[in-house]
Length: 140
Image (cartoon, rainbow, N blue to C red; front, top):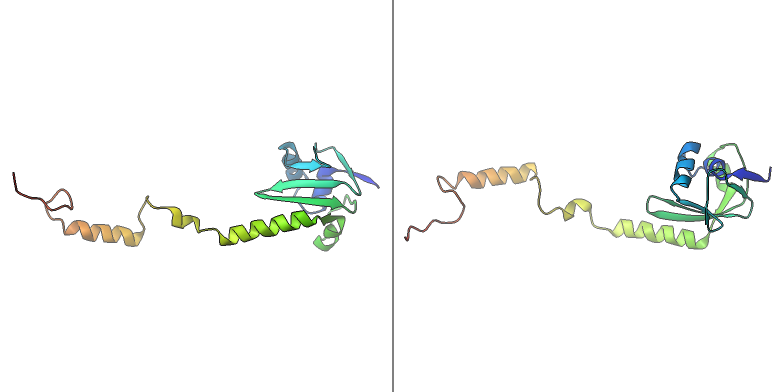
């Protein structure tokens, strides 16, 4: 066997959990073979370059082996070799994710936490009959 459908190869190389997921990603245009958009029935051979986007990470691998059987992960990793640029890009993306701010810290307004709600209620109890927290001046 020297050629195999790209969706089958991506499944056997363990990039996707099912063949239908691989075919779906290919149909969305997230997989390229030798710089051209692929279709699920496109055949790959040893030496082809496969580029794929998954989430926000792009990977570029060179096909080193063909297998239509999904084997264990160590065997699947022998079917491809990731390029140096792809490895560097994934490491850079991982570092950016690690250094990124916590998304919850960017929320300035919205529903208060339990502690915040209790603080608001305690502050409102001190207002008495006034309609706002500002001091009312009886200068008229």
